[in-house]
Length: 168
Image 1: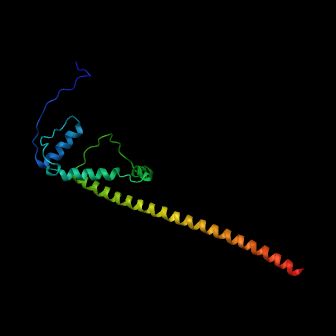
Image 2: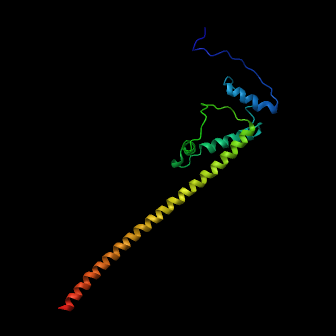
Image 3: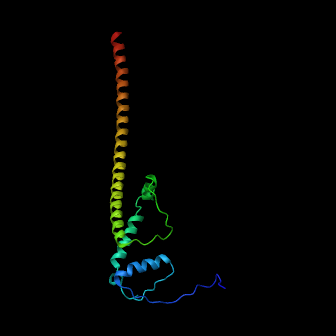
């Protein structure tokens, strides 16, 4: 009888995979969620490992997805997807590992979206700057108009007084 306080049966296994099949095999094992990988080369630096470039590309794509530099754009991509009624597949916590070709497509898409987001951020900053400048000019024009209204009023009163004196 199994108890909730006991771990499941485990075994230690060592896999030897061909390089061409390694990605598909590791992806399938990861999707099952029943394995834990141990590092058999802890002394090897990250730069000396195989597939380090692929891992870096994945890290870079994750960074692009999580890039919320402005509080205005927090969740920007998700809001835009929902606004355009684009169906999103809810795969739960861990979606299936994409195939290498799909990774290239995802990378290109993320690059494009990141560039668009940077452009939107730049436009936002430019619009804020323009708004501030125009608001400042609006206040200057109002004060100038107020000044000329007062000068005109004083001129009108002064000319009335001068005209009143000249009639007498």
